[in-house]
Length: 118
Image (cartoon, rainbow, N blue to C red; front, side):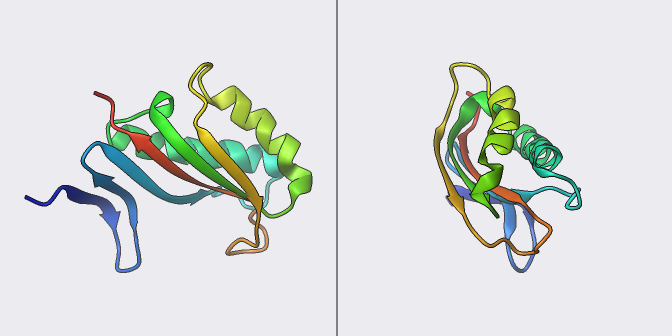
């Protein structure tokens, strides 16, 4: 039996890969790429919420997050939205790095690993 399943798969990638009870979300960015860091972060995290729910998980099940910022000057603005979004007492392991993103108007991207709700 194959313990790996995939959701919303294209030739290039899957939005979610599930291995046993662990979920791996592809990198999420905002749809509102002309917005400032706060709205982009909120939009991006709403997409994470939708994928987690679709896969049977939630914010309180996030194990790890890697956040990519186009410019570290946006660290505080991103964290203001992130801190309000993460349930108190459920902060995941996290890394935040500065990186060039796929399009110049994108300011933030996140990659998430989460557990399925049991």
